[in-house]
Picture 1 (spheres, rainbow, N blue to C red):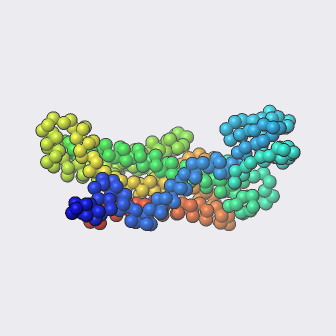
Picture 2 (picture 1 turned 180 degrees about the vertical axis):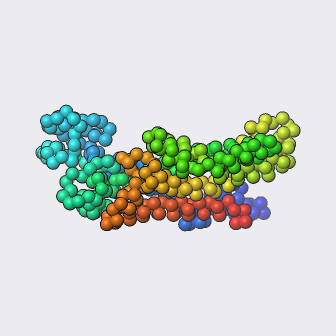
Picture 3 (picture 1 turned 135 degrees about the horizontal axis):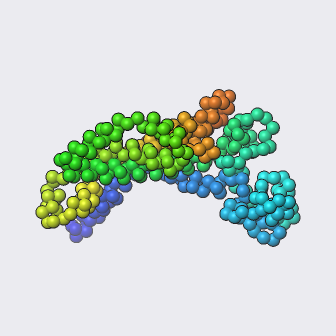
Length: 352
């Protein structure tokens, strides 16, 4: 009977694994939890940007047939036009045919893609917000809202990719330094000091003048430098753990070095890695935005928040350019910082 009573009065989550308890501590930080939900909701929506903002219809019902222009190429002759080129679904002549009789067309909520130009604007460019362009247009007549949606997705994907590659290299380098120590640690530490003194911005300028800037080139170049800050924390964890009793016992039993590093030490040394992940994502997004602002990032036709900020700088009177890009960038970074603070408090042993 006493055992039953004691079991009924066990605290909630007792007997669960450390991951469950960490998640419970994270949930107590409401600001971090709401930020995580909002960020992933926005990122998830942006992954379907083609269905939200596009100059092509989602579905076309014409002459008793259904068409999906988002996934297939249809010449203008398919809908009663005169040319064999791809259909311009914003052309009034084509729209009139698509809406005659039983025909109908379903457009995304925003009828602009990131590279489509609004040719119906009468005034100068950039044009202010209207019913057709909710956040106005840039200096080339492209819809700002569409470029923000696509630019947000590009920035987050770049931040996640750079964080993953930098974290992977940093964990491997720090683990090798901390576990083996001695000459290996000394040589790698001197290499990190020399490599960290390299002028990263000048190297980016040189490579941008030699090669055509792009997503992959920027990812490779920034990954060469982004791993060094994290390797120090992993190195310290491995230096602390390599002389513990359970590691010595594993060595005495003949367990291999890689098995000890991956299965025994690494799980206990991932706390600083997980804690710094949101801050590293925000730093990666800022790096891409800064390079795009300076003209050293992705090509001009690619949707980018930094390119919108550069246009806002060149067109001070077009307040909608700077305000929209700045608001999205600040909101995104604030959410990531709140998530990082919540993770830091979750893994803080003093608040366990």
